[in-house]
Length: 233
Image (cartoon, rainbow, N blue to C red; front, side, top):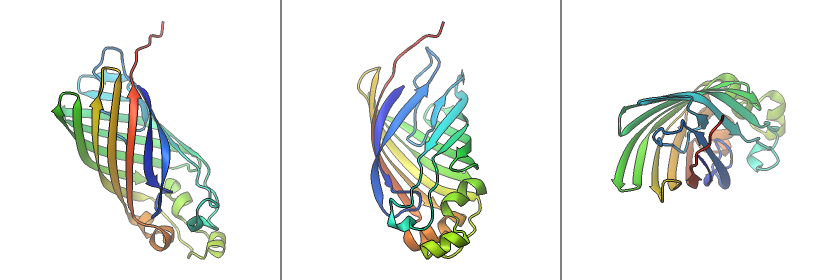
């Protein structure tokens, strides 16, 4: 499945302002398997194991760089390079209308920490081809995945006017998301969604968030995807 979407999302994690971004969609599943539900927070993934109600495989997430000269709130904090998060996912359907998914990823580049995402989605078909879903989300990040974005060292404090702050890892956010999708035909699907998360712990207490941003983060998105078959001989 490949596709493209657009999100109206915070300028950066912790920002109180938002911007529009294009978002790629990409997943691979075994030929002949049932088209599974896909949530807007899911990383790009490949289900190498697809047995009954259980799926698992590698996952990848791209985290764009954060440039301090693009937003006044980041003045003096320096740039954070692009990060690439590689890991895996598992998902399970205890019943047909409930999906449980967990991802564990290791960062490279802009951050070198570990990120864990856990979500649950109740999936309800309204009418033929039209489905709504909703459920809770939780994210945990290690110190190495948190500090580059929310810590303030002595040099940055002098340049930015913010107090020195040692950001450590832990519970990153808790939230809730909802999505509505419509399957036009077996190949094409369109969807819209809203995702809200509340920043927690050291992230929420960072002076960047408390003094210049917001711990309340909301993303609204639209997307379209196309599914097709291919064979490797």
